[in-house]
Length: 370
Image (cartoon, rainbow, N blue to C red):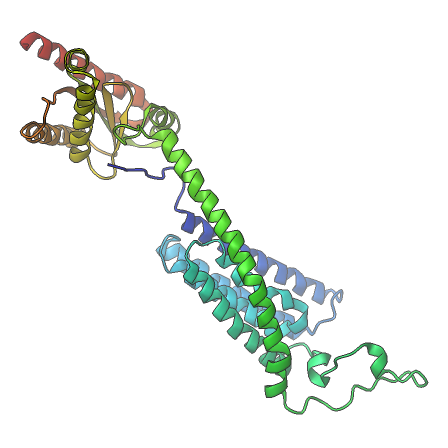
């Protein structure tokens, strides 16, 4: 009968998606600063190449931000789109600026480590390998000239300088870049990325395991062990911090009948059956999105969001039907007094008092009829 739900934040995956978007925005801002510094002649990179890199980053950000705004950030495929967009951005910047942004190729894998799904990490690595190949080959022809790739230098500068004349001689140009560049540049960078990948994955796994443990501890701290309903601590927290912001609420208050007599005459094991049996009928009668709390030894409260009094009454009637059906096969007679009320979320304490008063009236009637 477990029903733990997250109230105060979206899913961890949606949070990771928002963080990735934020990081892409930071990348956009940094590329904008580079463009401004280039315009001011502080950087000496070809202005056209910097402008293309900045424009490509802007276009990618606008597209992904627009898609997320339309469909939301909690769809399962959004993370794949964001990783793909990050790879596209790193590829555009890498092609245009080559060795200036060589470290940027690791960004997709860093973003992927936020997600618990291992397939996202594999997806990011495969795309990063493709991206590195494109960066090296397209950068050779279209980006900032990398003298090492053009002349295949492999030693210290002294090997290529004539001390007498001071002239530099790098020898012949790269005769076959489509063979040499993948062999001497793409492959080493992919191998470096492969070395980094398991380290990042391990860190990611540790982070997710810690998050799971924290979630379990939080669940234990707010759940009643016997009934697996939320406990009084959770109830008080919600009343103070959440329900006042809800426009309309409905409250149903239950008090188990005859618990003390059952414990005294039949034993606490039967009393526990009575409590868990009532909890089960309540769980069966409320909606999936409703919260039910055990706030005392024999008291239960359900809080329903954005409902009117008629809806609350219908749920109470459904509970009475569940109770009647449960008593046909229960080893002990299940009985509870119930009261309900509805009102504004900002007045939740008054709504609870009205439901409690109605429950008390019914409890007095039950005592009188017995």
